[in-house]
Every structure is written in C-alpha cells, then in structure tokens.
Image 1 (spheres, rainbow, N blue to C red):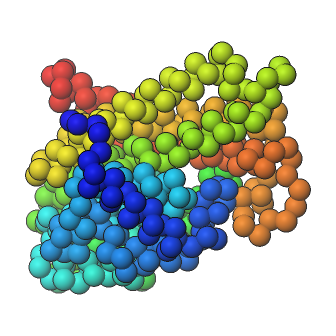
Image 2 (image 1 turned 180 degrees about the vertical axis):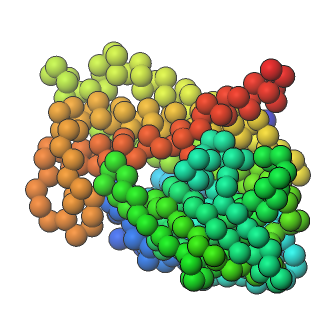
Length: 398
C-alpha cells in the first residue's frame, strides 16, 4: 500500500476541513474537545448536518445513499472529524443495522428503514448481550415464538447502549430452542414503543447513564420485521460484528487524543522539567505512537479489502484488540500527566452547564471518567480474550 496521499486525496482533505470549519457547530465541537457529555440532541443535530451534505453513510453503497468514497477518503474524513472535535456518528443505525438490512433485508425493509436512518428519524440500539450471554453470545436465551403473523418475544438484554433514547432495537432471539447454539437464532427489528418492553438504567463507573437492561414481556413483533431467514440470524450477527469490531479501532480518535496528550505533557512539570522530557514517559509515549501507526496501516488494509467485496475476518479481531488497548493506554497516560489531580472525580464537571471550580488543571477533570469508561472497550463487541481465540482458530488453526 502506498502510504503517500495523492493530490486528489489532499484536495479532498481540504474539502473536508472547509466543511467542518463551516458546518460543525462550535458548541458541539467544544463539548467534544473538553470531554463534556453530549446529549441526544447534539448527536442528532450533527448527523442531520452530515446527511444534508450526503456524508453520513460512509459505508453504504451509493445507490442507497452512501458516499461512494474510497477507503482512503473515509479514513481522511474520520481523521479530520476527530481532529475538529466532531461527535462520533451513532453507529447502531448507520454502521451496524443498516449494512445488515442492505445485505440480508427485503426490498420493503430497505425502502422503509434506510431513509429513516439517514434522516435520524429512528434512534437505534443493539439487543445482543444478555446476563448469561456476553462473550458467548450464542448462549442467548431471549425467546421468540411465532404466532400467526407475529413473533412473541420474552427475555432480557443487557448493556444496551443509549437504549433510553431508542426508538428501535435490532435483536438476536432464539426461534428454535432445540437447535445447536449458533443455529435456531433469528434477527428481529423491534419497535421500542411496543407494549411489554421495559428499559432500566445501569450506571457505569464514570457516573453516566450510558447503558441499560431491556426486558421483553410478551412483546408482539410483526413477522415482516424478520431480517434474513428464520433460524439463520447468526449469519447476520457475524456480519454485523465485523463492522462493529473494525469501528472500535478508533484510529482517528486515538490520533486526536495522542496529539492532545503531547500538548498536555509539554505543559505539565515533573521534577522541574516538562513531563514530555521525562525519559520513562517519553518511551511510553513513543510506544503508543508506533503502535498507532501500525494500527492505522492495518485498518486501511482491512477497509480496502472490504471495499473490494470481502468481509473482514480475523483482521477485525486484530483491530479490535489493538485499537481498544491503545485507547486505554492513552487514557492511562493522561492520568499519569494529571498526577494527583487525576484523583478527584467531579461528575458535575463533565456537564456543559458546570460553573464551579476545577481541582487542578481543567484537562484533569475528565481523565478519571474517561479512564473508567474506557475499561469497557476491551469487553464489548466481543471481549479481547475471545478475539484472541478467533485469531488462533482462523489464522493458526488451533
């Protein structure tokens, strides 16, 4: 792969920068850069701006409203968005369920759901994990029984990110309890306003209501909301997870965070000198930067292969492991840079209306919250231990 950008790609980067300078709301960018908590309205507002530009659905085919960009263009766009402080596009609709609908859905499902996803008319969440089915997702027990033109769903999902805002949930359900674990599973699209659905908050270590548990009690789901074939939902699930694991790599976010970390380390004083001059800290910083460069190249190769029609396999697992561990290490280095000021954790300081006094430098207010929150990265989307098992089977044949 040629790692040098062409003149056309450089011109595209200039176009993206001009768009972000002109269209990215300053208040949203400031929240992102200061690590303040974003509200639903912030995410929806930005996604509508992207859709008006035709730049929301990066990974969709052009005939369905996608950009038609090359892998390099997508990489440039995501990198520039991270540097400018643009919010991450909510992945569940645009980057997760939409590709499944495009590949496995009926024409009616495509015609109905895809335009609504583009217009942010539906806020989607993911119904995969259960209390007894996390890394071993195929052990799920949520049951769907067909009764005439409906399925009746009973069970529980957990760690449902931003489910408190959701209009729709894509769900893995067991439709044949007598089949093998990976068989007998179906992929359903469920309206969250259907009677029988209860959403309860789970407050994370950083004090945020980010995830939930969702209960289904005799929830009636129309049969036309089945994606793909009944009992063949595991195929949809695996296809979706390759997109989720590739996206978790977060190359653009890591590059922006690393640049900020360097600025902080140049200003913080350790033993009378800037922290960035400390040999131990500099070595750790250099290790992270080299790993990030390697991750970026691997990510570009994987996306290029997917663009050519392939479905990422073990490569997605590599990206998931490398990307999440790097992002965790960067948050750890921020805590190192903050020193004792990383200890105070003021939850209220993470909200945009905070008008109190910070303890220590302002950047330190969010470092513990981010450190705690990013512990989840190596768990969701298939734990890193499970990803190593996938690599050992698919590549090493163990």
